[in-house]
Image 1 (spheres, helix red, strand yellow):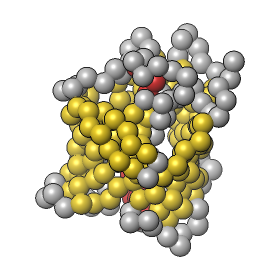
Image 2 (cartoon, helix red, strand yellow):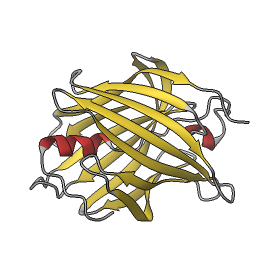
Image 3 (cartoon, one colour):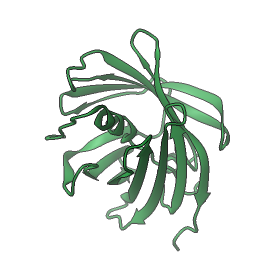
Image 4 (cartoon, helix red, strand yellow):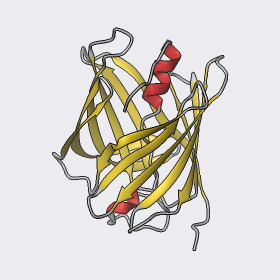
Length: 219
């Protein structure tokens, strides 16, 4: 990924909440790795930062090729008194490699669309305890490790989730210290919660699913 300039704390926040949230199709079996990736349509609503942020995600299926599944995610972010911002990204899942990647993203502060070359790896399926992958996001390095499964209680319900621990080393607005994040994935909805701590163990920020609505799957 290249060329992203973030000029405010709000921009840093958008970067954090711009991480992938890939829900899955309601008709897919929980035992299918693809159940963690959507074939849509689906609408999810999140809250976070002590209720200071609201996020609405709309997932729409796209035409795939060669067995690859693709979706468009429209993410509308409302943070405190800032104007609402929208980010539109496209994502794909290749059952052969198991990779879930982001292909494109619009800017929250303009009309530009970014294309990831190579596609930006989000996670690998199926989840396996101890699984590891690393990615480079511009000057930022992300180390991912699958911790295992836990049961979490959220406003939207109780879910059994795979937990992925992400250690992000930022080189952003003079911020050099790593941040630790925990992503919670469940079949049929994908990402349902995310919690973050700085390396000194202090709570940083989080988001959690408050409601969702599944649409009818395309024939």
